[in-house]
Image (cartoon, rainbow, N blue to C red; front, side):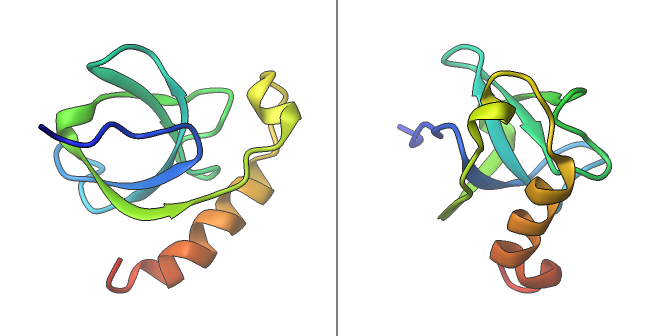
Length: 92
């Protein structure tokens, strides 16, 4: 069984037009779906709904601020934290 992500986990999209992109899990919708954001293409106020089977955990997580978890966006911080984990897209 595939490991379920947690809020704040950094994942790589494995399917769709965003395949290969690093994103952060900002909410768990169900056992099948999560909401993802990267702070740039997909902002926290307009997250991507994605099936869990179409993401891969990378073993890192980002700190999600209390404001972000309440829906107040801080996309600049979110994208910076993902970039720090992703290291510019190389070998995550």
